[in-house]
Amino acid sequence: MSAAAPPAELSTAAKIFAFATMCVGFFIAVLDIQIVSASLRDIGGGLSSGTDETAWVQTSYLIAEIVVIPLSGWMSRVISTRWLFCLSAAGFTASSLLCGCAWDIESMIAFRALQGFLGGSMIPMVFTTSFHYFTGPQRIISAAVIGSIASLGPTLGPTIGGWITDNYSWRWLFYINLVPGLFVAVVVPMLVRVDKPNLLLIKNADYLGMALMALFLGCLEYTLEEGPRWDWFGDDTIRTAAWVSGISGVGFIWRSLTSEQPVVDLRALKSPNFALGCLFSFVTGIGIFSTIYLTPVFLGQVRGYSALQIGLAIFSTGVFQVSAIPFYTFLARRIDLRWLLMFGLALFALSMWCFTPITHDWSAREFLLPQALRGFAQQFAVAPTVTLTLGGLSPDRLRLASGLFNLMRNLGGAIGIAVCGTILNDRTNLHFLRLAEHLNTANPALTGLLQQAGIADAAKHGGNLVLGQAEALKQLMALTLREAQTQSFADAFLVIMACFALTTLLVPLLRQVAPPRAPTADAH
Image (tube, rainbow, N blue to C red; front, top):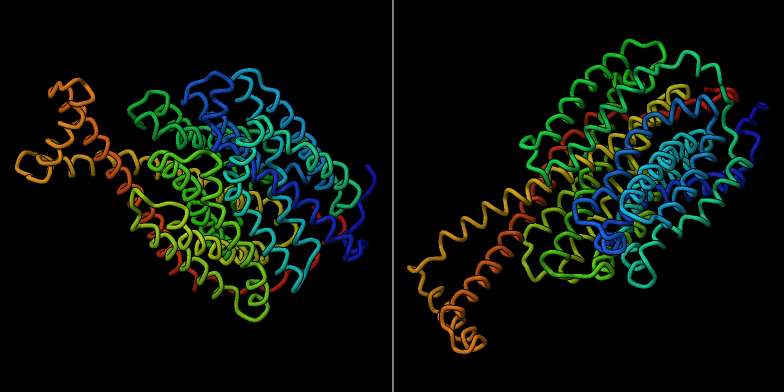
């Protein structure tokens, strides 16, 4: 391979175009995390699969992506950012085509895993390239763009996916990646030249560390995704996966701290800013992905919304996040980023508090205010975290650390969804039992309601009072379950609010960072 041109040789316009092209790849990669979430029922119907099998359409993508993200730093050092991004975009595009052509649920799960693994490398490389290309005010703008895409992609996923499924076919959820994917695969090698390949790294690579990391993250993601559905450690498979994850995780940490060339730079956690930034990335992952999970589930289960209706109901989050970008870029040039981060985290906590009065008849209208606050908060919570966390690292450590930083966001999302799923399950049962305690013969309002409903239902069964009373009791049980479910959603939002409130208090521990020196042409 020929030596790559240093970034200084590109004009500002060329840098912006190259960065924008990489952002296209970044967007489709993060969009596909949630693009199927509102359409799983349609995919399952089209492939004749049950609910549990269909859930793996999303789980397989997440497991593969969470494994490859921390590997991307090492891989970019081996073959260069230029060619890794190109291969990642091309592989993502090809696997998207295969997903659209899937003939059964097994092939779909395999192709989705391939899509997540091949496309996941595009995510952290956008972060590192922006720090190579831009300095000063330009870096603030690029961080704002990256931050908005990182949270906007998953947010818009259900909206775009629901619209495509309702108007075309679920297969077009994957076909829409073909044109932008090919564009990125062709343009990036022509413009993005920020480093040189170093094939010698293959010889001394820490392959044991890679294997331990893959086992650790893969089994952890499986445990988190499947745990709420299978009673956690009451299931043998979940218990085994958790043990494998725990043992390999300890081995991975030990290997990363003792190896001369670790696959992930855990030593970067010695930097207080980086350690805190990873924590903030983890918590924002909890907030972004958990709320994207909770809102469609509520609208689908409690309100009975279709995929398109769900997408439109949560679309306001994306609109308000985009509207926050000019405010953030204006303020970031004049105000300490730590204050902006504190504002974003506190506003996110407030938005979760606004979700807690939720009732069974909430629709898009009631969701508007809390989602507007959340969308605005996401911009102020994510963008300054990127700058404060990665901005203080030297160029030679940036790529390995960027993978860890992005991993924490996805890991936070996985843990957040798992915890919320458990809350919905356990707290629904608890609230149902508490409500049922008051539904007895000593409650005159209940007995009167059952008598009226029993008589009305008996008329439908030819005057049979026994069948009428049975039908009325079924309706009462469904009504009680609906209210119990609604209260459990409020509990989940309250837990997320507590996470952000506590994290907000840690922001003053961050230090303002000075812009790092520009990387050399042969920085690896």
